[in-house]
Image (cartoon, rainbow, N blue to C red; front, side, top):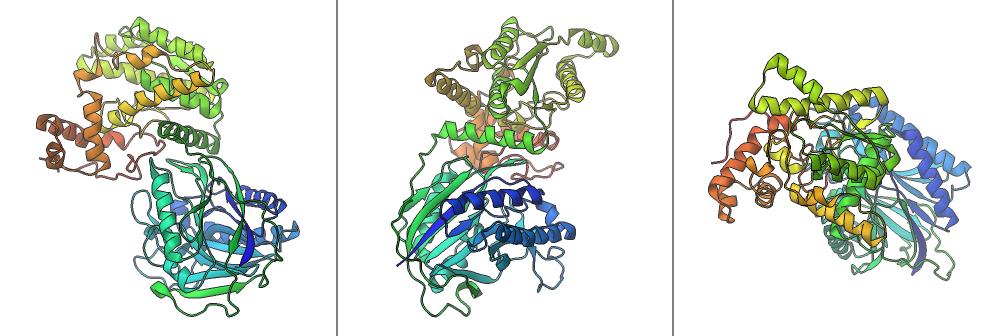
Length: 583
């Protein structure tokens, strides 16, 4: 057996920030080497950020990535880290690929590299390209066809990228055929509810198939609608957990591993799935035996509600920071949606950077005004009141609107007011709509849908209540003031756009509505399947009809953090113009 100290750096990257991302790699490599690491790794496409989407099709960006990689290799050596192999993800291109119809222009590749001795010692590209959910990698990349293996301190380390583990075949069985002592997979792997359980079982299974210790390194942070939770995992060849990193926390997992010594003869030839072994010897001799200092540990898992809430905070914080915004603006109605959005914002950017405006109309209840003011007092956010009644009266005098048009005018006046304050003061406006409302079109275009980001866009209404209760309970347990007024949680939801209005005037009870929507939106079930599950047929057809008719509204809603298996946006893509209806 040979010994190897591995450092898995679970870090955040910003798309397009090649210089800043390279600096992060340098800093975390320094930290890893100071911890005595013999092999240092970073997540998928760390150097470019992930996902780069159509930037992959720009020759200038691909070449900038390649140049940044070479420069990084030189910098690592100049800083004294040249004798420690560093595995880093980046954007490359395939020099051998012939241009052809249906292949992305320039043959870009989602690639990894091993930097050593001031040089790019080995490059490889993702073999399995995902083409489902939020992933469009067939659009952007051409696959790799090698089985990369590097010999480090007498251990053969096989390398893979994300989907190479999620799909059967390819590099996992190839690692066994190549006789690898360690399989290292670098990943982005966006967060979804309950994905941590799926991920652990996957890594266990693949370790058993590869017949060697397997390290699964994932990134953290946020990019547009995606949030990354880290949760890096190392398991032995039998699938037993050796180490597991915290969720949503940047850091380095460093641990000593006992691994099989590589055979004298390096693996070669073509192995499973037609992959050609590409082997590089970096350091052939095993290390002298030493007493292991870092044996690994399992970070505790977050409970479900805390996990989802944390994902929403991380997603909002990343979106604001990476787009250059220091402060956010929210319309505070006194209701549960704006209250939860405000609590998330305070946790994401600090209450001193959150600005709330109460915009009462003639139909706003006194308790709603009081609830908005109480929320501001509880959280410490900046608060003001601007009544829209004079503006509303002026419009009504000019247009004489009635019914829904009158109701929506109030929402649009509030949207205009928020965007005007945003322009004047430089805050980013947050849209407080939830997934239930977006599904059935219970929102006003250019009204409550205005904003640059929707923090709870992928949270069903029933879960909005649950998360609000969790946040208050968590605050109380820590001896802090619960941020959300109890009345905002307990009162019947209402848009308050006409006298006595409540949401159930137009919608089924949220418990019923959300369970139908989970089947239709997230599960792609049809009307017969949903009715067969025990739901009343008339209600099902009404909900599905409302959902289908609201597609044009969702197309104009801002992005928001994805936490479900199928969020509105990159995940669920339906034609806006369509006469198909479930029957």
